[in-house]
Length: 486
Image 1 (cartoon, rainbow, N blue to C red):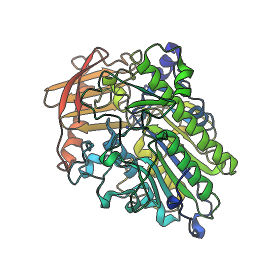
Image 2: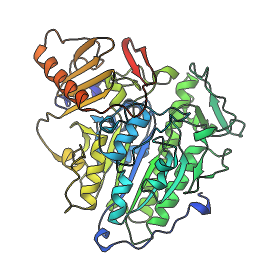
Image 3: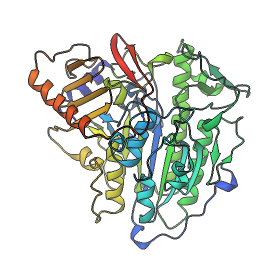
Image 4: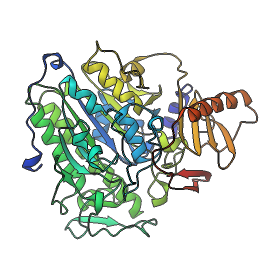
């Protein structure tokens, strides 16, 4: 692993979270212009740390099916998301914009902050694809608004199965064959005996409650995604499937058969987390198998990424890796995530690609493929993933993040972290210091000032948040003192 990590760091010298019958919607006839457009499957997983897939060379967590995406496309070693927390990151992926630009600055709590959600003025991927003739479905975790105006079938999706909150119980812990593992951070959490509020699983425009508490939710999400692909692929129009697993987010629950495969991991918390990843990876395999079975894999764009990094407080993150944890923070491990892409018809396999990419790139990549002659909407901030994977030579892309009072920026090997309430600004050289433990701002004033100006420009451009900051907190992550933002 050390050899692989070193090679990846050297490459980053430049740079910028069985369906019920009522859910079955027959896709209508497609416009002629969409006939050759690719199908699109976006798989977003929850709280998966960068080192916890094997596509980058790690051996601790085998993910053979996720790796299949890389084998036919690219595994971006410098893949980033818009924020280090679930809801804000998802808003960025779905809109192709930094969500703070339209006031989606802070996370949505599980009680549902009043009026909190993805503003209807901002179009989702599905809302942009519907006029191009796409049949659309969303399966799994939503977490960008629970009120009717934010509900998936009112945001461009023809079908929805899932839950609206940030977390929910996977399965009744009394179900035979289920392992439920407590963690050191469970105190104060609701009990596992039921699903509550926006954690209840619903489907369809009418939000019909689904009675499936005795079935493992990761498998249920896969079942619905596979069924959607099977039905949609028999129609004449292209489809977009947004598969948003909540795995491996807390609570730690997994079928015994997966838990038993990792008996060599002595810590039951880490063991359950790894087993949950393996169960989710098997679901990715079923999705890829269905695309192959239907003969459409070649013209299906598949994107896989995590919404943010691993949350340190539960005790299951990989603390031997500099990017093993960081959710809620703007350390590298908060926003640098597993990020894989494949579209066999349009891009040859590239292997591990060190060029920086962002979740904001997903929407423009899809739109360019679906409607190559149309002008790209001006508000989109990303770049084309295929071009990024194919481009040679140095890259000086800049990325800036921020949830006041904490901000970060990266360009090349330089990474700046800034806390306005702590009155601290730090600069790190990631090629020499991937753990971000040595502040070199005093020795590199020009680089510090340049990145700080970028942060300042970003911060001044933002509107007021649409709902409040919940809290900030000092936290230690593998010996590094940093600040949570929620």
